[in-house]
Length: 558
Figure 1 (cartoon, rainbow, N blue to C red):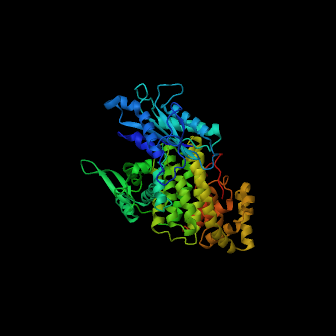
Figure 2 (figure 1 turned 90 degrees about the vertical axis):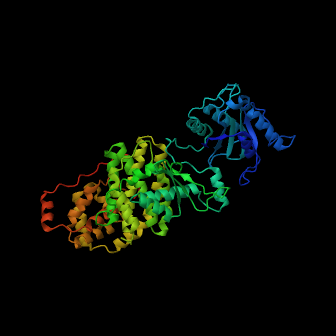
């Protein structure tokens, strides 16, 4: 159940609100508008009045609601109308008028508008004009002339809504921490529908601005990318001429006066204000924005593979920073992916966006490698055209998102945890689609049975606790192929396999052969070590890569 508070001001605010609630709506969506409750339980009902013109009854109702406000004259507050739509989820059971009336009374009491038993509280009405929601309208002067005590009313009504969901068996929403992006209003939804669009301007702008932040190396490139994607930018400048903020608009999105409808960055999302964008861009500049020579898919995969370690061993700001960087990577992946995968990857990025923000301030210093490598992929995604690069990255991203779920869970970030869980589902679908053909092709080129037995023998010696699962994994043939390719490139197969096993534990791998296939594919494409280096490794003079210990809870599917 979603309540949302809107304040109204001006001499006709109450009249306008009542007129809207009992009117046809912006898209003729108001069907049978009528009162279900009011401050005195006998307020005039324009929707059900057997006598008189409905417009006259509307005027009468507005006048009664406004009476305490009018008594104050010039001392009336600036905002005089409190308007709160309360909407149930589509899958919720149909509530009766009596049930909606009880919900309205609980909401106004929680908000401080009309505490239970207070006969001098504000005047209010609850109007139902659809099966799934009501509108509560109140005037913000009590009948004794005082102002209502409604401090933090938005939080209060949200808390009450969670209790109402339990009481009536409705869909239970996750409690938030105030860091969620602002939802599009009903007006924005109706406008999008009227224009034949599936998505509101607010949602389109949020996606385009996020992608520009993820792709840009500096502020100039950020604004250039916005211009290239058709976003109009209006800067807010201070007395010195410096840009202090920015607003965004889509071409053709205008108000009733034909003027562009601009949204400030902070209203698109808390982390899209200009100061926050500049802070994000500082992780790729002022140092050169190019990545080191090498395959950017491998570099992005290596950086993503380290995220679980940061989440389990780093402090909270470091963990939060890693989630911000992971969200930026997911924002750009749909742009680089085949068309068959775009929908799932876009859904994954859209829902994971909520998991990238919390009350914890993000430390972004450790995210440069991931950001730069993903930017390099975005600029030239053609390497690994067989899909192996994307499959590798998605493979480690699945684990990173699973750890993100656990990280948010233990910090009681309910909305972020739920968002990461949804993202994991979409990533699993995308991963299966891209990894399947690549692994099938690798398995088709599997080496001889004798070679596979040699690899299997080393596995049984190196990781006896996982060997049976690896050999039974359908991707075992693909793993044998990449080991043979590494040998052909001059690597020692046993050494490469040991390195892959040492990078991360296989305890949380549902498909361990798949995980090893991608690790060895990356290791095998590096320059082969010299004979002296190989001898040093065999003699133990080189220190092995320490494994990362797994916390007990994160789960994922490979």
